[in-house]
Image (cartoon, rainbow, N blue to C red; front, side, top):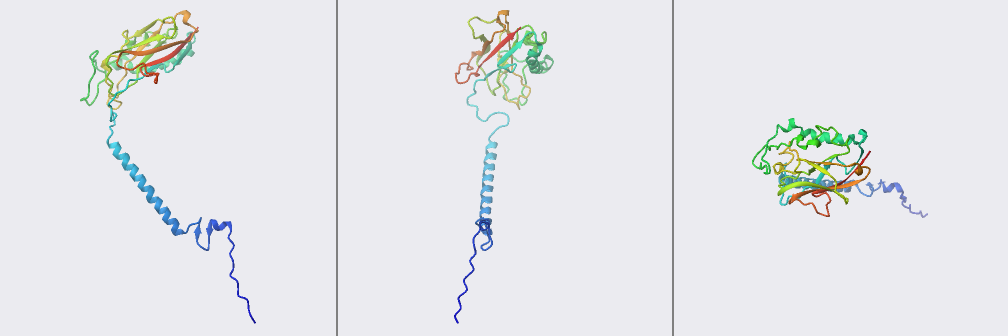
Length: 275
């Protein structure tokens, strides 16, 4: 009597086998040894990349100095900024709540220029660079707040805003090693057909050479930038009208006419005083 041969048992493949196959021991298509090899490879690979990147950064940092840029072949021209920090100064001269933020901003800035603080600094030679390349602790030249006179906030705590004749403080951005040639001074003009009366303090509106060069935040921690105050002597007919004013650095080699950078050596702002 003949017997039929037993057929092998067929195992059906299910979706679970794609995650873990108990017959082959594969997990997500790989055996344990295969996973161990690939994980080990990537661990070694990324450890090498991390070490190489760290070494590269360490070598680069050894070439840099903490206080000044490594390469200063060309010292750029500085930009001009104004205080209060706004390009649209709008206020009612009879409303202290409106001009109060501008006044507080100016007062805060000028605290470091108080005469009692500046008297601790050095009296430097006028119109001469204060060279200190071989000096470890850089001295700071005096710039007293009282030099700004009507715009100092000492005689008039509102800086002229209550009278509708606001003061604007102009300063240059700090650039390490800058030595402007000539006699840089600030010149402001109103962008309109008729001129606008203005007063400058100090009266020459100069950024004196004694305040240059600047040696950086670490070497020159107490350095204060020279300021030029411009008081806009608005008349009654100037009220309730927006007036655009442009201030430039003139009289030196500093750039002020670059069409690609509207703030290089110049700045334009708008003032509107109402009553």
